[in-house]
Length: 199
Image (cartoon, rainbow, N blue to C red):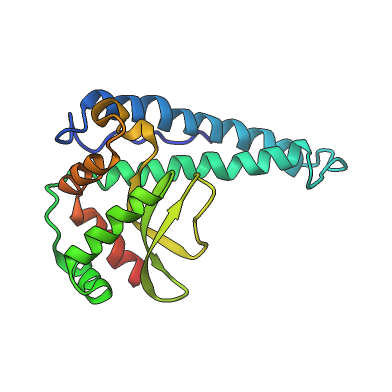
């Protein structure tokens, strides 16, 4: 079954994040991960449906390469979908998620400063998540799609800090990109994710 490509949930630019950047990001990178995901899943069927498993090896094997690529491609799809989905709003923080962030970080300013600093420290992703083990909000960083994620943590707010997300519009000024991202978060989506995750 092919991955369903989700359209951008908004039209045009997001402030200084240009339509061109968003279209390249969505149409080339996200769609590319979806195609690779489908290709890998298809190739894995050869192994999972009676294929030759005798070469499986932790140093190198076709199966090892596919399994590593599987998590990279699938997380590449999911993280981009969450990232695009939580954009397109007015940046106004409200509802239950606002109360939860205040309870966790003392006030919203502390949360925003910490999340932004995590964005400066990450090489790929920053994810505000509900950790189902701790029953708590956490911010996790990932240097690659399949690194840094925590099993049992449900993404609430996802920020892509790879250079492709901002370099056309901001050059190497990642800080300004993160500030612009905050202005266009759809906190209603984040709040829905929070309510669903904490049920």
